[in-house]
Length: 226
Image 1 (spheres, rainbow, N blue to C red):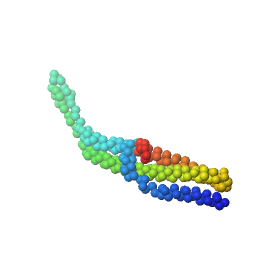
Image 2: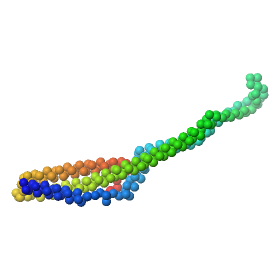
Image 3: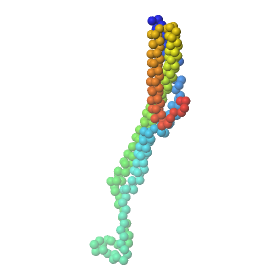
Image 4: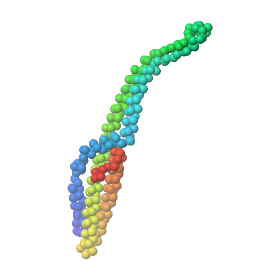
């Protein structure tokens, strides 16, 4: 029973030593990397491209509104051959040659300034929405980056813990074979080794998930060694 207690204490000490070795991830946070990833997200993230395209679409409405001032005017012409008689019994005001006409739509003329003003206001709103989207995008990039750094540290701890647990289990196996420890102690070491390996696999899975999420938002694979 004493041996079982000792082996349990040993595993706890090993685990605590790993936690102490990685007591903070703040030193792993690189502001330069964050800035790079935010810039990549603005360049490559699909939803950001859609937001930018929507802003540009709204911007074109300003030009269309300005050009539409020409819609106010309506020009027309009528041509009467020279060899026709100058006086038309049906319309005695008709004359030979070209007749030009110009109509002005006063209602449209009064509406145009408001249409242009609305187009400019819509563009301003679109730019503000784009700015808000970029701010939210930066926050999301940071979140995914922090999750990535956290899981990377967790994987490092779990990997080292699995290595240490395996070493302890191998040592106790040899002692068990020479009857230096009991079967209970040896079995406990094997269970602890299995648990450590399971934790390592879980940490690996979580690491791959957060890495994929970060790569998704920046639009490319992470550089080697990051």
